[in-house]
Image 1: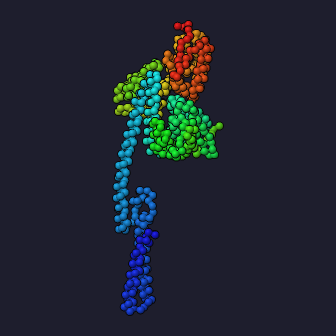
Image 2: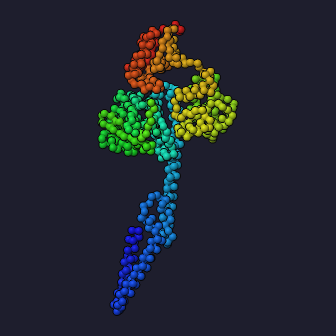
Image 3: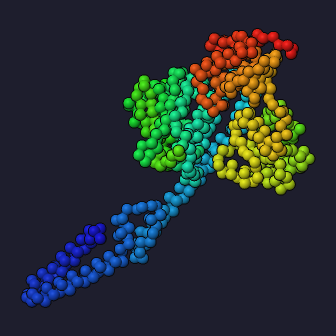
Length: 330
Length: 234
């Protein structure tokens, strides 16, 4: 409505000026009947108003489209009326929309192909890794133990790639159920067994066994795994423990993973959850991708959990994963 | 003698599986022609099939259905895909269990053993009981017993694991990492101190049956076993 009025102000002014101009010419010519003149002005204004009302009604959809913000791309091609201007405008939008869709479709296809290829490749790499692992397990000496350690690192890397690719299709790939928090943590610890032992860091498991939370076991395990890998890496060779505790606060259950490692400088602390952010520590330690905590946060957002990090340089780091609902079995 | 059929298209992997399964006392048949898996199955008539999912031509699910149509034998899937969907599919098609790559030897062997046991009863065990021996010293890991020249003593689970590992690796030095690794399988997350304590206890147990200083500390490397006892059985 506002736009419509702003659009037609020149027309209204023109119309009024034109009427008075005609009256002025008659008056200068000697015409003296004021009432009739005013009546003709009134008729003129009624006609103008009638025209404006018609115009507004016929172009209403166009004007509302122009003023209302677009919610989605698809809204732009909803009909805009049948007047010449509206339909021309619609055609323009349709054409633009078509071009964009086409571009998007092509991009999406190349991206999906790329993802599918990557997925397939990662799965194919698992067979050679299995062969290496089994050969080394057969050999069972110092050298093979060291190769096994590297194999484990490659396996971890592959797993991370897979999960990163899966994050895209997260909506179709998760299943929230009641899971035992302690059970999940135990599994994660066992998966990282060699990493713990190799780095002389040991877990201390103080998670209540009766605590169940609502989550997706697979994603939660991956997420805790990322946190644990960091904790081990940054407290390596300290002979310290990594402490897993759980407690309940009001309506929330909390899993805390605390290490006594080098800690994170204050400047880096705010940015640890950003992708590709390695910070000071990451640059000093090998194979930091800077993605671990970013993934952890992404996943926790999607599962409806929260993740918080607290750290002090030289003292250690504590990561809390907060679950909105829990059950305790006694 | 139980027969196990290996259907895995990676030749090295199937070779490793073959040697280890045979070591455990089973007979193995390896599929070479992946067009004719079913014919091989019928001629070999195995008790258990190890089936890879990604095979040339038809996938493992297809062959699993084919086998299920003619037999009730145990089928174990091996797959690189860890997605729940795949596991559900495998079980839908009639598989009995599922192993994801990359796997550990112990895990595969344990699963094979448990499937065979489940399918064919206790008598199907190729060996009645594991026995670990070294120069007359005998460990029964399943009974948690230790014996030398007729004198016996009981071991804890952890002590048994330690001693078994030391005997298997004899005469090499076993690193502390390896020992910790083995102990961890026992659902307990053992640290360095616990390892020290258990080594001390194991030495005491060995003393009980008259063996002194058999477990030697190799500085910075780990532990090794020395034969300091005489055996009447030799």
